[in-house]
Structures are given as C-alpha cells and as structure tokens.
Length: 200
Image 1 (cartoon, one colour):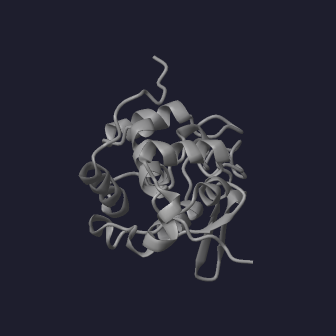
Image 2 (tube, helix red, strand yellow):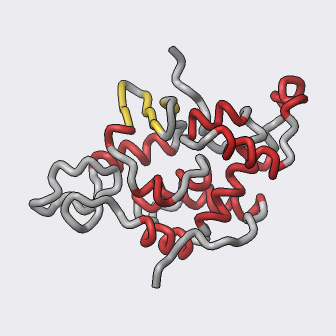
C-alpha cells in the first residue's frame, strides 16, 4: 500500500498541543521520529522534505543550533535543539559499511538513500500525528506569528503558498503590527518558538 499525506481536517488546538508535548518529552519514542514529528508540528514541513534533509542543513556552533529549511538559517529553540544534537551524534542506519558517511539527516536502510517519507507518514500517523492535517494546523498558527513573505523564506515554500495559508487561516496582516505582541495564545505558553532567523 502506498501511503501519502491523506486529506483530513486539521487537529484541534488541544490535540496539536498534546502531540507537541509528547514529541518534546516522551523519551520512549525513537529520537528520529520525535525530531521528524517536531518538524511537522512546529515548522509545518512536508514529510518528503523532512526525509530528504541533509546534515549540511544543520549547524551546531557553541551553544547554538541552526537549521536551514529555506533561504534563512533558523535558530532552533530548546528542547528541540538538544534532540537534534543528540540525533546528529547517533543517527540510525549508520553502522553498515555502505553508510558511514551518509549526507542525510535521516539515513535510509539502503546505501546512499534517505529515509522513506512514506514510511515516515505511517510512523507519524501511529503516533497520532496525521502528517498533512498536522502540517496545516501548524501553518494556521505560524501565519499568526509572522508575515507570509518571512515564512516563505524561512520554511522553504513559495510566497504564493505562504499567502494561501494566511488566507485560509484568516490572518489579517493589515493589523499585524498593532497586535503582534498578543499573537501567542496562553495554551502555547512555555513551548518552543520555532521562527528565530539568524541575523546578519
């Protein structure tokens, strides 16, 4: 059976919040699945893009961890940064002779290949994170935190796609500046803020 990001309604905020907390805190889950899930529920990334990420798109220097999903380098917040650094030190499927220098952030079981995005969709679904629906819910939140043009550059989507997400979510950018300080809702207090772009 071929698994794709099947259409379904975005999860309710409480469901999304529970998924985020589980990914951040549940050490019983596989580390690579936690990171992949975080990239869906915090950054609105497609499973196919996550599976094809390269180690060169992650940078760890001093106490900072940076991730490049689009044109900009993003400052990865804690505790996601710690999860990512631990994963880089101990990626799965690296013990075979054909994979010792794999460039993929999520190496596959076959030499030279990255992880199957279809398999990733299945695993996330089993964790209660339907990939497409969760990604859309994430975008509904993100477009209330930053303008579409900023999101497009930071997250690797076209400006038209980012604008479409904003329209679907009903984001009113004419009033953005006046209400920016109140964009974050109390239900997400204490969770990592994903969009901090590297300055300079």
